[in-house]
Length: 173
Image 1: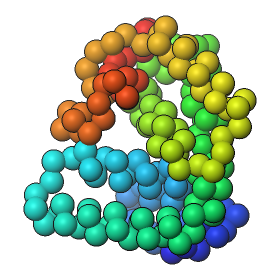
Image 2: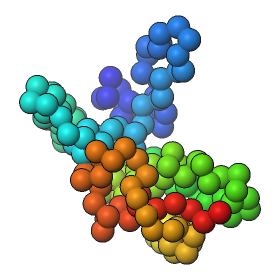
Image 3: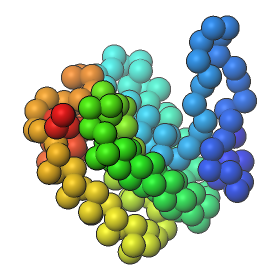
Image 4: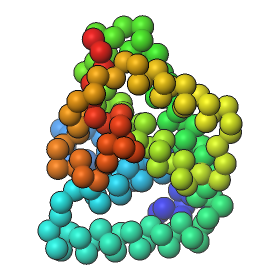
């Protein structure tokens, strides 16, 4: 399935299965979502059997990455562009109406994490997008009140503050 996704023109890919009745729909497959899930899996303290399953998933993912390197890099660049626009839109909505958007930060900041993960995978990020993210980061540094980790505390060792500074704090109200 991942091969088909990488070779398709689609950025958002249906995983082809439905959730149990009454549950929300499963998210679409994206490269950014996949990389974030992988990073979170590595960050989460796991028992031995789960560590083995994560290692096997890593091997399979790396095999696909190597087999379809060009398609992987192109898809990562497209996903980067889409995530950057969504992140910019959130920060603009926050800027226009801080109080109405404060509670969305812990969810929305995952897009910023994905940008960092996708940046390492993309073939080439246009300079204008690199500069836009740098500008958004400058804005975020102004409005972020440093503090605790915004996600589940057990994930914090996998997202170090020096690299993922935007996961450690809250937005000004």
